[in-house]
Image (cartoon, rainbow over all chains, first blue to last red; front, side, top):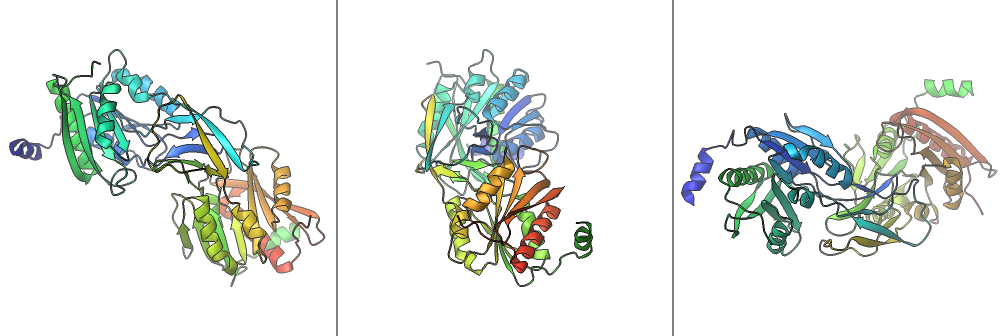
Length: 242
Length: 242
């Protein structure tokens, strides 16, 4: 409501994450085909890096696990660079038990080549088949662990965004999900702006949502972190039970 | 010989390419799988950008056709950004008839996904098959045209480098080829240094070679361009006839 909005604007939320450890993944992953070729995606890492910067400003101790990104490390953020999904999972598992919040913002490659060729594959045939195998699901692995942190996922879809996001929230047993429509090229991948919708289940397992209108990725990051901190503190959220 | 080396050091080769148009491709290409995923390779574009900068310093009018690179455009170089191999071929064909030299330094993806999905492919199966089709061969297309410019190719291999380079020189009907061993991670992709061997056929169709020892990519670029200019001016080279 209006009162809440005004109060939010007046309280800049500094210190809201004081004493909390926030673990964030960002950027794409690269999955090697051979020593020179790889499969990847268009994630710039900007949203994840904005989350890291803002979480630090809000008082958190922040660890940022980044796929290949051409972005500077935010001040006082501990950055760990990785390439592949398997490397990212390892880096997350090494640090997640100490985390109060886990925000999986990286665009992890869903599949990787089944076998990485030792030397560069020679081109010869007019066509070629690349066999791919599913990568580990970092988000679901963390969220389904015995004592998970407050886990936030992202859904980047080109259509039916809200439906996919709600399904993913429940299926992966997340505390909250941030959904954005990457088919709108003015926001999302590589853009400096974003517009998303947050979804979560309240303590009665009722779906709740909150839109964060188009704004800078810094402002969106603040909106996500404030909502996560609010739910974590009030405990007014639940994990899907079915 | 020593005399030639000393003369080279004394004459800085400024103006050697005065009045010449040099067309250079650089960087990787990205081949879309769907709106978010792509196949690419580890080329940083540094070697091609160094060639463009040095060719301009040597007096040439330079057009640089670049795949996705995070590099600044060298002074007074005309840069055209492209993503895919097909876009790169189109950009080259639009400009190659005006070129005296064509230097194909880009690491063009050999294959692209057969069909680009309109919307993001949903992950579901534990494995997946990606069907790929050969990309157009930009280098061979230019070199086999009716009146090609002096065409220089690159061979980036992980083993048997010299053999592959000589075969490629003849098979693609190039004027000269620059071979480097990308399995040595201290040079090549993403490194600031490089070490290559140049190969060409003299006017008697005899294979000639010249090593350019490990040095900055700027110095290697100068070595390549000086040798290309020398062969082009003296006409002491030939294209494989078989």
